[in-house]
Length: 276
Image (cartoon, rainbow, N blue to C red; front, side, top):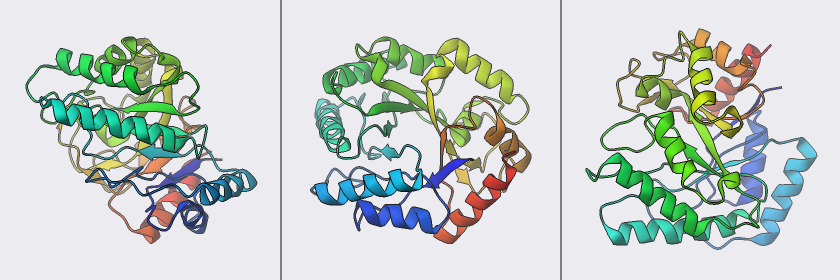
């Protein structure tokens, strides 16, 4: 059965997110580890986290896909911004151990005209500082649409980062359907070819999670504007192929479409009904 959920607010705690997920038919979810537009993080309630862990085990939840705040830029041209990203990620990975064996996803960053190669080196340097051999969390680089000076617009850029990470066994990739479509990968007409290229460049075993979103823009637009499932340029027929593809069907799928909870519940039902 499709493992699917959406981004949920963590404002009421861990168990509240689990209950909300169950109420909309989800069996996984995503949440921001701290304020998505800032840097603050509230204290962890260890008891609340433990109750959520038990809740998920009892209900057969898949892996969670936590998300770093958007403000992190590991390859900023400003040293203080890179240091903030390093400190926040290090703290987040400690916090993630309260919900162990899950995923921590982040946007690689924008090199701000320093060049992609410089950006790749800086991102890898941060990862080499924050990853620990004993952690249970897998860190996911997200595929990016390629707007501005984003790093991660190609599979090759993601591979170049991972190749420089010493503890690469703690690394994976989150495949965002809107982003790869906007980056120019034709998942509508050649999903097999795109995933074969991913396997050639990164290795299909690096593919750990999917952000499942339609796109407001045509393939290759490099704009990153999400649309509800079936209402954009990717379309419902392509999503049927995506949720049934043998390389994807057993991964956790996270919706990031422009929706409220009732909309997410509807999309979860639609996508479950597409899986054969």
